[in-house]
Image (cartoon, rainbow, N blue to C red):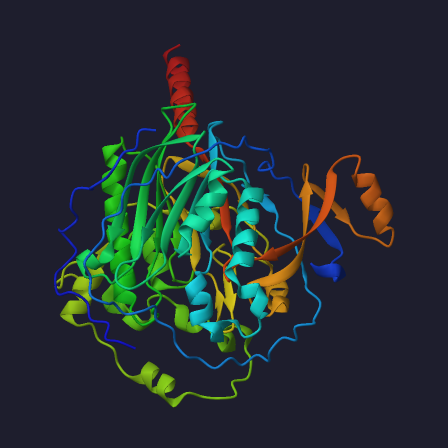
Length: 501
């Protein structure tokens, strides 16, 4: 591993005016199944869309350090390739109670698709996955099929190194897109796609964190306006935060900077609401997660190596498997004290004399806001796992939103027992999809008779599907929340009139 030194210059106060471009244009043993409808099933007209993203500026950078990967021992035995694939069912969960909101709604996907180069560069992470399941042509087809089936309005992808392969497919289904590659010698980056007939791109800007001493990662910010209701605007951010579990200060700095830049762009377009999507490389129990949800964090209370919580997500800790090999260096690493240097404080907060990290956005997580099942959600409401390979099992992907938006529903993730039976992602699974309205039924011995009866109410379709990445796609539908304010204003006015009489 190369040195990971950061620039001595502070990113705080160096947030420049945004340089932008605006284009013209259960398994069989389970007794209860719940079938949920998906409104993302209507066919969209195929239109041809050009590459509407801005011309990305390139940095003349010296070769940078590659993505960090700790060489942990895998305590689980290799899953036999001939073991039956599990049944996987993902369903929509509606917000309860159903929030008062406008009729204008849109859906956002956050999806780390596993870069082609990384899939083979870190082959030790996918020891339980068949070689053919890792090939890009197969995974590209599965990823695009999944996204087209979900029919989202906006897609935020991370770890994209075959952007034009995906663009060629998505364009044919009505999407436009933009892409920002990581700096240095990295080949992957972030990509964003949107329905060209539903949204008009007002502004698109990219962030190169290297310019601010925050490593080679990048982020995107795009301001959109709904074509049929021009008063509805939203800013969408897309980020893939640094992976390295030990560099919590860099993760914190990247998130601080993105939030600050998002606030500037949102104010520019009239204080529009914000959605931040991405692979944040932090867990729901981490200090940085608390920072995102509370807007501030005193870093002096934490070890920077534990800020992200990733070091607790090795399969040994998650599945409580007996550790067969103990790494003495890892034990020593945890016992050694780790104070903060001035440089690390500056990277984390932007000021070497300030231990309080802050960001300007009041963020909520869409998945934590929509209550789910204990089989798929943790204690704070976040998914139990959005990523699974031989050295990690946990949640690192999120969809955050600000005031002005309310999540109306989310696509639930998978139960832990189902994910464990896959042996690791990507994988081949049997997925059952239902199209219709929500139905709950107890599966009895007369299963076939029940299914036949349901066909009069819903369209029942079983299909064979496969997952093309080591992450699960997160999907949330949002509605604009101005209607809540309008309702409150109306009630207030009515009360005043009644009092006057």
